[in-house]
Image (cartoon, rainbow, N blue to C red; front, side, top):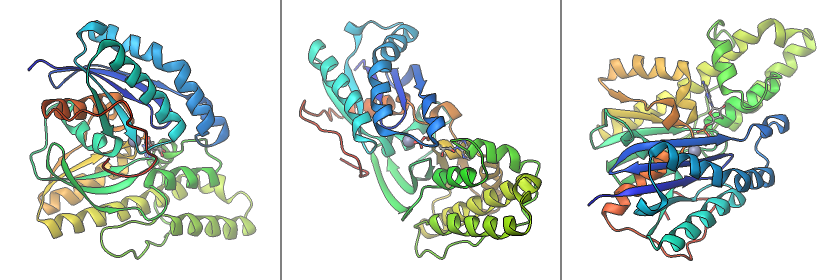
Length: 334
Ligand code: KG4
Ligand code: ZN
């Protein structure tokens, strides 16, 4: 069955549209909202308004880049949740209106499931079963995947997400938002010589709020003795923070792998761009005999291609939704 899916993603601050033809990405356009940088975080109301401005041009561009007409679309897939409700509403309303106008099915997609499904945007594809560590500004999860749409959360953060830990630490260091990539860059010239505590969280769950407090107190104490401490030691502090976060993530991933006996291990989410995390994955992975998968960065951060790929597998199973499907802020499966 030929399937051309138009996919919409608007869960946070990126407006994205993609076209997927028979499971292949034909286009993937993202409009990033830079204005949140000055606020040091995403402002929900501002994000929602920007989605309203961006959504039609982004969809037009996705169709144009794919060389597909609106009439050729078989179904519309959209992010129903989790995310910011005001942002989700824009994408959801657009998708519903489009489906209604062209009398085509509507497919709701869970954003976290889609991050995992990004591994099927481009070969090489992981074999089932595999484990996926999804790490972004909003999420930290270890997921077991048994089939395209069959997955289970084995562990997740009890408080802050890993990307949030990078961003909040960066704020304390006077770096701009988001800070993950800057800490990564600084860490490359630094030495991880400041020890920060790893939290004792049972099972496969995570916690990053204790690290945030530890960094805050550490900086406060050091600055009391030397007011130039941060600028004199920025690279080493960054390397120490990065190493602590990476170690926390990798230890849990190793635990999950040993518990389940699954040695195919994948990364997803914006933090998977982190060079320390990638290096550690290779190092630990080598020792543990893992086969590792990290999608191209374009498919790691929020993007509509991953929504379209998920939508494609739902389309094959005729998993459609009604016009009354409302967005939801939290949750893994709808
Ligand atoms: O997946 P994403 O683009 O958006 C969502 O949060 O859903 O992830 C953004 C997060 C931010 O917290 C950002 O600081 C982090 O990914 N990030 C990084 C790096 N690049 C982006 N964190 C560490 N190292 C990086 N190189
Ligand atoms: Zn995301």
